[in-house]
Image (cartoon, rainbow, N blue to C red; front, side, top):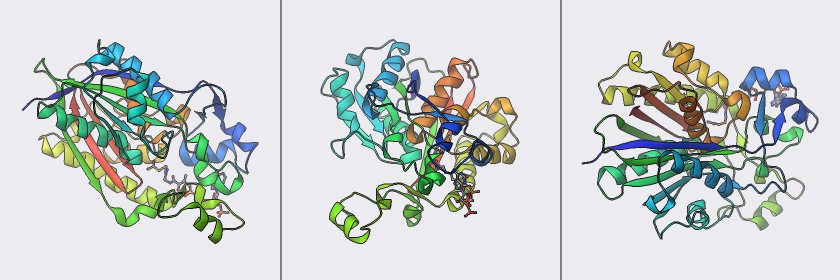
Length: 335
Ligand code: ACO
């Protein structure tokens, strides 16, 4: 059995900065409300004509990760691509990345696990490396939220939280014997699927039905979130799955050097930090400047934390996510 290790990291966000004041011009909201409830000060949105899309951002992040791993696209054996906002209904984004990057006819797998997408994708890639099936896997989380949000007052409870961006990691067979992924734990609970969802258009809720049921409104085209319900479940599941990962490795909260939580909401991160009694330097948050980028949030935050020297060789790094489904999971890494 082999072990895997992150050998390269990269992220990309569009240049277009959208502040809370910018959103206040579109809907009935305020900088004070958004900052107090979510922690977000600004986020990035794809701008018409800037050439970005979910897959283009993914490729930009992936190129950086590959360069840092000192690999070329030819060295990659598989793509695992996590997104809830693919460029097309089908096929998924993985094949677009394969094409744009000129890769061999390697497998390209799309993961549909929303905010837990990157943690699920890392876990899938880890299994393929453990068995010896593949040596280098490109794992990507990328989201274009701004293309599908309701920027009127009706959608303010959701649209102020989210931003666009992409993050990527290269997962390689660990040849050094030092460090690497120690464990991954994944969960789901589908009975809450509608609490954070986008109903249609989908094959279960197709365009004619949407129009028939909602002749005046287009609400099903936009994401729905029961914010307080999500909050209550998120804080429980985040805590459980971090503990589960630590216990599986005979570790405790005191062993954590860096916790990278999915950037759902600053108040959720602060709750976890307080519960585990973590000092500020042991948790990384950047939702303030990028908003919630769903599957991209962990790889963007992980890359930033690593780039700024906050993660060093030998550190115990914990990734944890919770999101729509509900789904949740953790990854324990010895860096
Ligand atoms: N600006 C101003 N007022 C707003 C806004 C806004 N952007 N959005 C909602 N409001 C209003 C509501 O209409 C409501 O008004 P009312 O009292 O007159 O009816 C009032 O603010 C309170 O609304 P709530 O939804 O009860 O606000 P809450 O305090 O719960 O905050 C929030 C909403 C931030 C979403 C909160 O529920 C939360 O933190 N939820 C956690 C879920 C989350 O963060 N999800 C992130 C994405 S999912 C994920 O990544 C896992």
